[in-house]
Image (cartoon, rainbow over all chains, first blue to last red; front, side, top):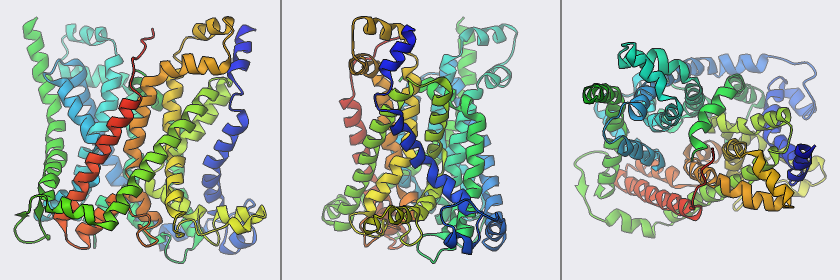
Length: 279
Length: 296
């Protein structure tokens, strides 16, 4: 009873109405794009607000084949999946060393990582593009993957580090007494326990890397594995827009991401907040 | 004991090696390169010539740069503050809702955070479109057709449209972080305050806010980091137009480098922006400083 009382007292301050309004503002554009992607051009004009009367997949076919979104999608998948796997492993290796292996100057290294997070990423791009073109490394998968991995390491390592600090030391000590080597402890003990930060880093990296535009645009000029943002640019705001295929292309990117997030969200939230809560 | 520690330490150094090498080659060296370039003149070919502070002096007279800097700070600063306040208010009100309802709302409000910026740009190019955009259509339906406008190409309006998109995208982050911190506050504290006759506003001011201050501070810092990364969004939505009115420092910097081959000058813009961001992060962190309360 008292608990309910308390709830009533804490609640309703900004009424539920406000939250529902925010939810509508958040979800409606997404819902609208998905709904429109199933309409023909005529129906978009004649039935702007309603649900599609005769849902069609032609927009998806057009986007996938005519606008070659399929090819861009494959290129992006290869780049994003490879980079994310590499990021997760390198980050957790480093985080384990920093959090639990008594490495010298661990705090200094964490500090440098945090510092680089504040610097605008565009700063890297100028000298990097010069480096890569001097080394004739333009227009390849590796051109995208290596920098993506390196640029995302500070944030990923930081998320893993915060979580590993919360793991009890006893577990590691027990594995050491069993005579496991450190790499074995990492692979068999730490990684299975670290699913929250791994889920968190995976989702964050998918989101950042699917959308990375600038570096891909500079290094993939005139060929190479052109990624999704470059393909989507074709639909950009300045040309006359075919909304059907446009919305289909957008839906193709956001629906899998939302599904991934909803499926992994419990772990994700744990991974994201384990460090944040402590501030 | 010492032996075990040195074995661990050696393993640790090996484990750190991939991170250190990648960071040195792809982050530290390029950053230093940018700093070096910012004090030189280089047109993309030939030798790099040092020219002291010339680039930075030129920046102070570069109208486009000054406008771009103002835009960057406006988009980043305003969106960070609004996102923080809205996120905080939502987090506090979620606390009083049932578990299921709260999970549902949290999940939905967080979704934009996980969408790539380029995609969000395309999404809102659709929302803000003059003829067929949802927003203008909605205004017409509501009989407010006169308020319909070219959200992305009208001077004075375009920059706020972009700021709105940043807020839309980022608000979920402070909301979730603050919420996660709020639920660690023991109910007994609120109960005690309740018995003492505290009002709900007092409870929020005297209990919720002080106890979550470290997280509020951390979210503000994250929001600054997110809000200043404007290149992808602006490039997709407006390409810096109309005119130069939505150009931000990254957009102008990339143009200066790759369209005008003025690499040294572009680098000095990057360095200036970095200094401004670090200063703002410092100010934000300082404004929300204060002792943190340990809870167990």
